Length: 96
Image (cartoon, rainbow, N blue to C red; front, side):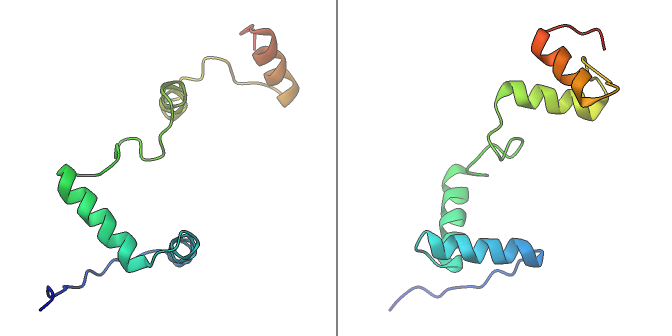
């Protein structure tokens, strides 16, 4: 006799749910199987099977820039125009 299964309920925004269903179908699995795979990986690792502080896998340079932006430490700006921004970025000066 097979193992008894126990349901899990999660609330998602409608657009997240639709994207999840679409991707699961595209990769040839079911939403239930995708969740079971996540739970198995979570349990095996003893936590998230990815860096939960960086779930999208941003590189170190991007993470530093994101922290700077969030804390208001933009080392190049502010700029009066996008032309000024690009000039500064492309010539490497910081005379904004």
